[in-house]
Length: 380
Image (cartoon, rainbow, N blue to C red; front, side, top):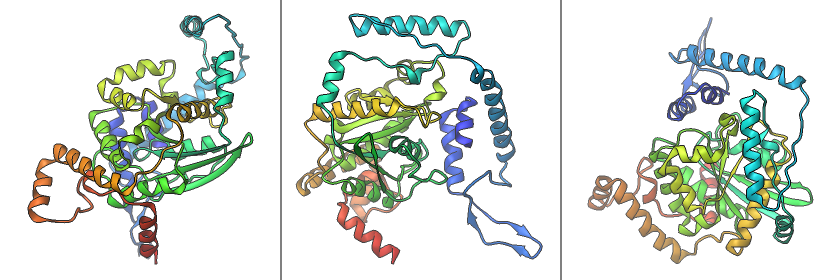
């Protein structure tokens, strides 16, 4: 889509998100011989009448044409597999890095998605960590590839891609004799406060896969990662309590943007903001190429990492008790006061209830059952 082409064209991530937010909230009308229609939300395509539309259209067409031209001769070439054997994993990685550099320098294409490092010890450990059922919750801001990642994990298209999710949705599938449960959630906004309804849906998501998710997958698109992005993640994760970080893994999406750059180099280039998030997750992360939907290795590798995390943490994530929610509310208000002291002062003086446009952290965590009843009342 348009965001993908903007990223491939080198547009800064903050501008990509501005365009995404702009189109997400845009409404339009159609003029015809008998008058004009009522306003409606733009679902697909570029918004006619926007000053940006001609430039975005040209960028999309240029990028798609260039990709077709670049890939045409690669698809008609044979591929060779290289197998490295050594007594240590470190030495194999050293060999692999040398060959990567040599091949790319000579104009050859290297498939990073097919790289696989195995040892007999790791295979034995993976077998002992095997789970017959896996429950995953996807979190992140809007349009980072959460739904597409969910479809990739399930192996089929279960989540809608043409519009951003507004409610938490659960889908199940069976792959290789294992039951997979994936919950997709509404994303938070990158440059403004997340609406209260979206926060409630995120809280409800944990109750949709009882007794609790094995892993929370924090979906982060490859691109510029700012201090504001870090702050938004911290504010929204307060909803679940500090313990949630022990069960969280970062999933980098749109890995094709990296081309030949190792993900470690990208992480280093983003600086302390992204490093803070990875440190909170104990440096657990995985990379997914959203272009390679049918890729055979990236999902099994993700599942193996999740199983290892579950074994290290002693089981799945357990939602907070009522007492823990009260303690967590104090932490949320402390973070909110540090980030927006003026708003907190007004709240104390006026005794006002939290409004929809106030900071997320001032909202008390909501349990799944009460939120579900609230949503039913609204729909009625």
